Amino acid sequence: MKQAEILLYYFCTGLTLCILYATQPIGPIFESQLGISKTQAALFTTAIMTPLAFAGIFYGYLLEKIQIKSILVIAFLLLGISEIIFSFTHSYFLLLNIRGFQGLLIPAVLTGIMSYISQISSKDSVANAIGVYIGVTIIGGFMGRALSGFFTDIFGWRVFFFIIGCVAIIASMLLLKFSQNIKASYLKPRLVDIIHTLKTRHNLYIFLMIFGIFFTFQAMLNFIPFELAKIDNEYSSSKAGMLYIGYLVGVLVAFNTKKIVAFFGGSIKAITAGIIILIIATQIFRADSFEWIFIAMVIFCLGNFISHSIASGFINKMATSHKGISNGLYVSFYYFGGALGSFVPGFIYMPFGWSALLWFISGVSLISLIFIMVIRDIKN
Image (cartoon, rainbow, N blue to C red; front, side):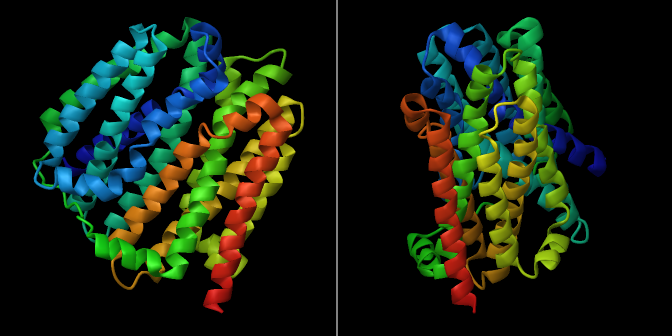
């Protein structure tokens, strides 16, 4: 029964990431059908991602005494209903607000699922269970993008959101029937602990580094469909969705972090290599063919996930106290960078073009690289 429960929670994790990223490959469709700008279309990702930046700090206060089962049953029911409403809505303002509402639910879902898996897994299996959870988030992110593009080409964009809404309601019913009643173990950070953590230089530099890396990552993933629509005469939403297959390289990285660190001779060197790979891949995106862009995406994702996976482990390794605060702030900086990266580069891309955007996000990545180099000097 426990194994079935964990599988159900993995399924719910993948479903949540599908909802989170489903709008990304079909930005050009929203642009043309809703008569909006590229930046406005990009805001569909920003609206749902922004609450994730603050979840680690505030959600502990809101959800401390609520059963995980209750949180998830209600959250998936509301996600399902709102996704169905989204599929029938024609107003951009209402569509954007629905995504913002969903963004308030998703942090509770992801935190609740991780807490639940941690509590029902044995001490010997909990690390592996969380590792699988991380892998499922990556697979779910890819499936949301790929299936969204595929369904849009065949049935139009509304069908996929209706289907995924129905699946979310079914997930709510399954959770109601099969979940145990377990209280979430949420951490309530104090302001003094947050300040203390930020005053530790290697923590602050890691946080600023991951802010820049996820800023760059989301900028690329959000705006590449628009550029692909420009250069590819055979552009389709499913083709844009399949471009994200490079995202799956993150699964391999997540399960091989120790080998990667050993290969590069240390965590800082591995993170440095990841950022350099990311910057090189960013420049490959200048190519005007789908094949080269596909290759660039694989390399780009490889660099991103090496940096992210090793950095998150490094934070835990270096934290002698307030480890929970460190993790919460890491997640906050990560998603805040992603939220800003999903729309701010649009103000560069729209007036100045693709080349300017690539130089801009390469510059952001270079600043992240400088932060890592400073950490290396501190550690030495």
